[in-house]
Image 1: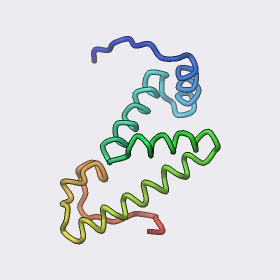
Image 2 (image 1 turned 135 degrees about the horizontal axis):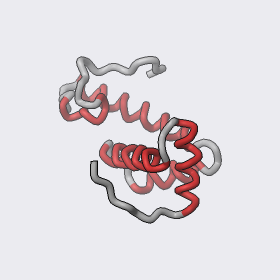
Image 3 (image 1 turned 90 degrees about the vertical axis):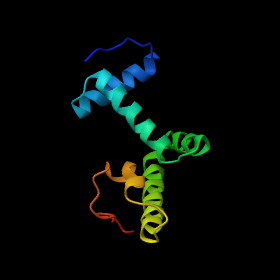
Length: 110
């Protein structure tokens, strides 16, 4: 697979290197992973303001909790919309990778 070089800030590179080591990924793979996550968040309708709020909160140790709370809330809204017939499973392909057989949350209090 062809690749291109890009410049990233040293602190991002070091964070990706450290996290990649924990996740058994190269630094480049970790940055690609984070980029895919960011693209997925944007595709599910997060606004710039919501992302900014989550990023600010992550500096206070609550960003992950806020992100998962948002995800659970969004999934619940999507399940209700699908159940009501306002959207189809195909329209929610971001939710399940496009391979959903039915809409439900697994291991969730919702």
